[in-house]
Length: 610
Image (cartoon, rainbow, N blue to C red; front, side):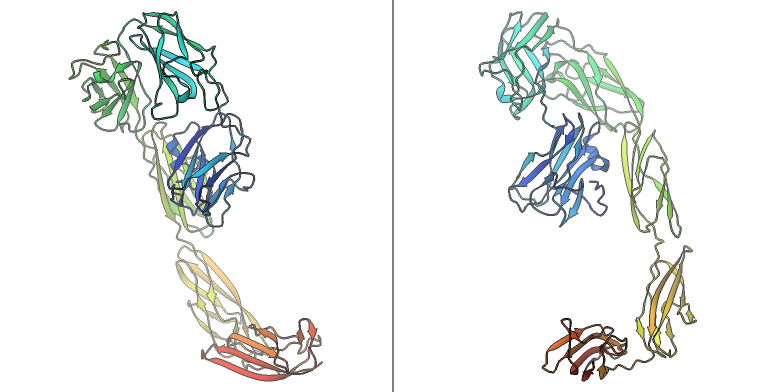
């Protein structure tokens, strides 16, 4: 799944559960997910899918409006406690994100992902925000249809109602003129769900062709129909309907097709009997721009308004096709509930577009400061929309854009294309190989008249090296040595190391190197910490080749009064900020000799003079 603003994250939903909701009043959305086991780690993400295919969430990171992938366990959600809308994965990340802003009439998906993989469960509570995601509209009767024989009414409600509010005897309904009564009522899918927006009402008698009105009233359960919040369908609601003479059901239309469709859905104005459909597809024949056949046909119940035709192959190329109805191997075309046969020869035409391919090519123009990558997509098969993500926060809607990069490493590039009918995506990892950096290692402190070793640690496709040692000396190898002559006093030289790579780019690193007038390591026998700038501190002198230094000073009673691992810093003659008395003190020095790699221990005395 896309990980907006989380470049190093690879997001994968685990044990996912999905919620879909609509915003009825704009505002902020606040909620909490409380694990029943508070050590469980739950993650979540919210998408605005208004006008989108819900499956786009797997490719389009722009649909994400809020998320939290913290690796911590405990209560998570969106509230005023959050400071950012998108929290990436990892331990130590906050469990709360800031509340997203919802828009009126927009549709949203909410993913709850359970990283811990236990089965303890959680509680979800919406609170703290100002948005309204509960439909406060009163449920109303929407449309009613009579069966072909006029003994069954199929009713749609404008809002989901609770199955438990429907009485089995249909006591909530009656029709006028009062030529028949409602004998039974059942909610569609109520056998498997707790809510429905469709009912089937059975009548005590067949209705003759004519105009009728369906009314609702309080039933034997003392209510009409109830939504989730126990809002009732008004008992003043009514719907007019007609019972038509028995006529054949026409083939009306084709439902919108998906890209590379291998199933075609025919939509009918009136239900037909599923058993009248020849399963082998022999009731239908298809012809068009290129050969394809029907291999089976299905309905979805005992009666249906939808017929699904399965084709021998997907329709991946553009073309126009016609479906003709004929008598199949079962001896008929299709029959409606009244047994009326739709005449053979009925036809319906539809068109499809080509599938598309998002594969793209690129060309890299290397430079020392900014690389330019030119991307190209051929635009075949009517592609008219390009959505590029070029890394480094660059996006483009051009067919052939350019990306500009100042950081030379691997780039993740994504392209999504569509021709308005089919969509495809492609991603590639593009490596900018011209990263280079000049660097070197050397001992900071060195002795005179001894070779100093420099080791180049440059990164990149280096083709030559140039050294300037600060005293006029130069070299052109990767790891040279250089000997500095004896200076009168400690001298610091700025060493400059320059490399050139195969792309013509030059990088430089500069470091100081100190050369001392002597490498004789010694500890003074006396010092005068009086602030005159002369001998104010006690420390080892010229410990140039000493590593892992431990320098300690003790008073005459054996009390440790000073300790350091840095030979360039010394004791100022105080303890806890108080000046120590004139007298003799003991020092110890331990270090590892850089050349011999042997451990050395020395001991002596020093006189503090004030």
